[in-house]
Length: 321
Image (cartoon, rainbow, N blue to C red; front, side, top):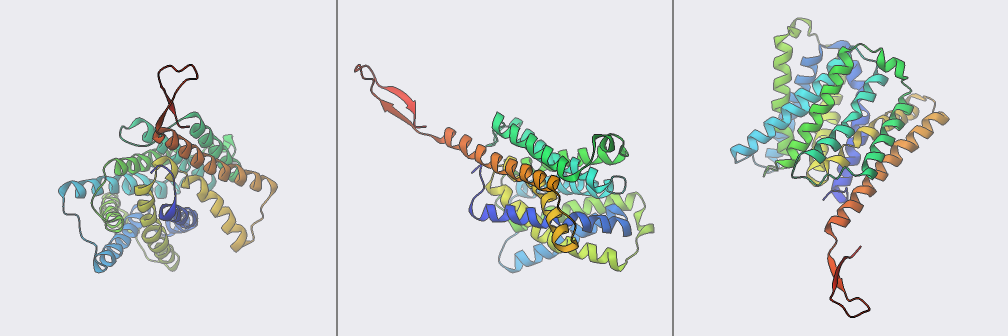
């Protein structure tokens, strides 16, 4: 299944909505707490809660060693290599500039999905066009100028680029190595492994000396544990199991749109003509990519039929499309 439908579509929309609201919580959190411990303990807490709930409802731990290995690799690539460095980079990069680098997840995802054998990814001209349009729409929405991007502290862009590539590689790796584990147990193990790795990095660089609980930090942590991790990450894992990584990766384009709409709804931030044009471009690109993947899937799965030429010659095989 390359395209989104049914429960996978619902999970994708959950990811778009909840992850679109987490940027503010991350920004608040890194202003109060050291970044690696903040990210690591967040995932450790969320993973432990989700695992306990999943086992209580009848799910089982993985029975095969290969399943444990896959979940561990995915957890390290997605969370330790991906999310943690986004959190770290927000100390040095404005949120608008950071979001430009984060949305390259969609581009990286499509690239890895196309070049790593064994998937349904089809990086044709239609999909590539949609990815470019979505990126331009996000750049217009954020309003970051090329000068701002070029003059940003290099630590931020380098970390964000590596994080986006690591997240995308982990997503495609998980898709290429299916397990017999439930999506919820799998997500919990990934968060526990990834969170442990991040917390070890934080301990190694001496962050415990700067650790102190504040009401803002605790609030940001609680929001991210529940909505960013337990709800959002579980939904992402489910969507990735049932759809192409290229399609699921477009959540990165939708997140800034959700963030803008929430700002307008909750904080009365103005929506300008430029904002509307940017959101139209971005959401249009997501729909375009979805339709392009459906067309590509239809062509690959189209049965061949026989027709007899008017001259009475031998039958000629022809695509049903």
